[in-house]
Each structure stands twice: as structure tokens, then as C-alpha cells.
Image (cartoon, rainbow, N blue to C red):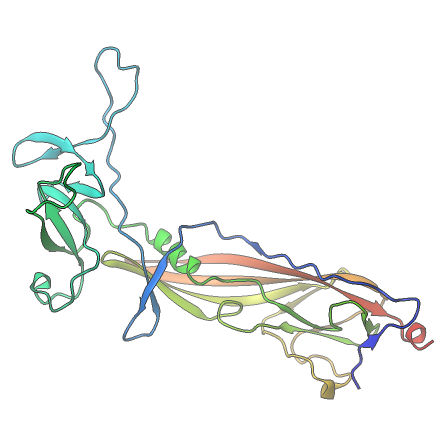
Length: 307
């Protein structure tokens, strides 16, 4: 028989479970899942290539007040200075033109790829102006990396991949149940488990973030859930736990359980500790993240409940 008892005596309670999610991950720009990889089935997250970090030359003229000015770049064809940025175009000294990532990328069958399957296609134009952002001299060119500078920080791409996972704290599954009029018996087993077991609450979940020709793949998995039982006890579970069923009777949970010895109201929290491994651009790393869900249960004495 189900060991939860609806209280009909002096221990009657009215509970409202408190649910709060706390994330240690920093807020990032929302990446966009445009298409699944046709071979792996993983979601490919596209992030535009980063703009170059052009230095700002100092003003050394009289009366300049010590301020700065827009960065200037060199045109190797005419030995002159040009603006480093016009609209969303970035000057490439090596190409001697303004460049930007071509969106959308041409299909692999386009001759501009010349049979390549790496790198990316970029627009190249010397005629970009404030009034003509796509002049007629614009041509596509292939490059293994953005011609305007260094590749993106792989850690930033890793964070974009993690952001797209939408990781969240677990929904608490627990016996005795949470809610008004729900009371468990002191001394009988308490079972805990992940109520909404899926990739975004337990893992593994994999996402890839791409910036131009570069990509970083991240895989997230919960390492453990630490259950703060509210009585000074912390239970560490390395599995999602086993959902309780009436047929289990007074059995202990096989993998994630506890026993209370004193009646009372107990705040319960479940902290999921995620380990996220990423790799790309010749580098790899690990991101740790913890997410918390809060709730509350009530335990009562058997002799009181039987009156």
C-alpha cells in the first residue's frame, strides 16, 4: 500500500513547493541552430566569424585632447590608408580589399570551392562605400580562415555550443511527494530521482558551434546530483535515481535514497553538476556548471498519524 498518508489530524499542512533554478553559466548571445549535420545528425550552430581586433592609432596632433580615432588600415596597392571597417566589411591587407563572410555559403558544387570541403567563402570588394555596401566588383573567394585576422576563440565557440543545449535543473521526483496534505512517515525510505530525464536535464547532449570555417563540438553530461535533504544530510547520486512505484512497498531505493529520523518540514534541493567537454581548433577544455532545483516535503510520526 502506498505509504504516503493524507494528513487528517493536528499535523495538517499546506505546502507550496518552492522551485528555483540557479545557473552558473554566463549569459551569451543566442546562437542559431540552422541545420543538422547530414552525417552525424548533430545540430550545427552557426556563429558569424568575429571581427578583427584592429588597433586604434593615437592622436598626436595639437589640441587633440588625448582621444582616439577610428582605426586606419593600409592599402598595399596604392600605399595609402583606408578605413578598417565599412558597414559589416573588414579590410584585408593580404587581399587588398574589403571582405566579409558570404551568407549563405555557396553549395559545394560551386566552382569557387575548387573541390575543397574545408575553409569558407568570403566576399572581396575594393569598392565598398557607405552608400554602396555591395558594389559590382564584389567577387567570392575561398580562404581557410577569415582573411581579416586570427581565428575565433574556441572557448567562445564552446560557450555558444553550450548555450544552445538549454541545460536546466532537474524536476525533483521524490517520495514522500511534495504538495499540500502530503506527508511521509519517519523511518521509512525516501526515494529521490530525476522526474524529467532527458538530454537537457541529464545528458549526454552534444552540440557544435561553427564560425566560418571553424567549429567546436561540446558534449555535456551530469556527473552527479547532490541532494540536500534539509536535515543536515547530503546524498550524492551518480545515477538519475529510480522512480518509486507502489509495488516497492517499504524497500530502500536501489541507487538514490534517504531515511528521516525526526518529523518536520524539510527543504530539499537537488544540485546537478554538469561536466562539459569541448574540442576544436586544435584545443580542448572542460566547462563545469551546476544547476539547482528546490522543493519541500513533510515527515510525520506514525503514532500521531494513526490517531
